[in-house]
Length: 311
Ligand code: ASP
Image: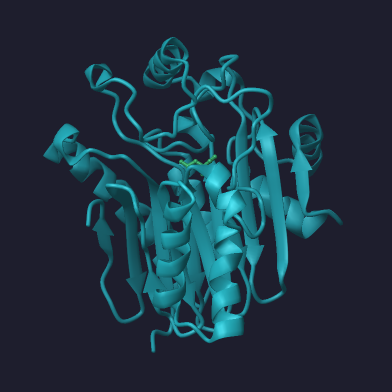
């Protein structure tokens, strides 16, 4: 049994292997390994799963390669609207925010909601006001502007599509595959935690919010498992995906591997594309997906870090 275990993801989707160069793959692997190393240090030093997942997600939010924080995709109106959630499986406490516009690290704000408010889920202007009150770092819109994201929006509008981050609308655009980020961890005192952060889907309209900040859909942790999802959020909401893993383990005594495989199977069955990362109270890790790839990696007290993209 591992004394600690940690997994991170950088999004799932139709990442076509044929459209990715070895250099690009290497860039993603390096970013995933950097996030893992940040979390590993915390866990190896006796830190909490909660601190580890928050720190891993901050690293990935600051990395423009991923669709979260700095690299977030644009809404139809050309704005940034970010969603995030964090959950402490030991205390069964959670914090979530949606549609925030100028918070540098949305996962830090979600943690503040959990620790410093009587609520679980804050939205839009209210969440932005809370961010000012609790003093998290704020940025103006230029921090979040990347030309690649802007081009993706223009292409999505021209195609009339709301685009999951990785799905290429037009291979000629040559945009790199990027994604939502998440982390799950078990710490040396047996506590589990999960965190997920996203810019959502390119060209989303009308204040659309996906699964990421919805506790039980995109993010969940309790005493049995911690889960962070990525993919077409509407289907992960319909499948109550993250909680579905825990429910199978609690009520059917399923293993983590069996429960997560069934959850992703069901998401596929109802039409959803994506994947999840999960860890259980024994340090087992599962990372199933039904897309062509999912940026992901793991490290445990017994194993060196591994970063993976395709099967
Ligand atoms: N699940 C996210 C959403 O639907 C997107 C993603 O994982 O790439 O907002």
